[in-house]
Length: 99
Image (tube, rainbow, N blue to C red; front, side, top):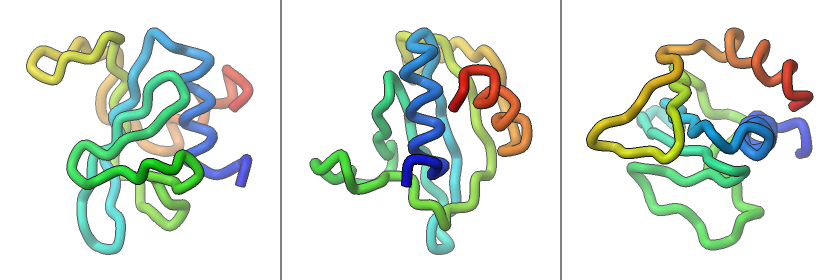
C-alpha cells in the first residue's frame, strides 16, 4: 500500500507543503475532485472518511488531470502553478521528490 497512487501523491505534498494538488478522477463511473495537501487527502465532492487509513483515492480510480496550486488554496481565486497534468507528467515530479 505504500506505493499506492494516493500515498505517493500525499508524500509529494508532504515534501512540497507550498503546493496543493487538485486531482480530478473517475471512481466507479463518477467524477470526483480530490484535494491533497501536506500529506492528507480530502474529496471536494463526496464525504471523506474520518479514518485516515481509508483511502480517498482508491487505486482503481482513473486519474483524469492533476493541477498544482500554490498554498494557501483559495477556491475562489486559485493560484495555479501548473494545470492539466497527466498521470505520466506527475510521475516525473513524484520521482524528483522520491515519492
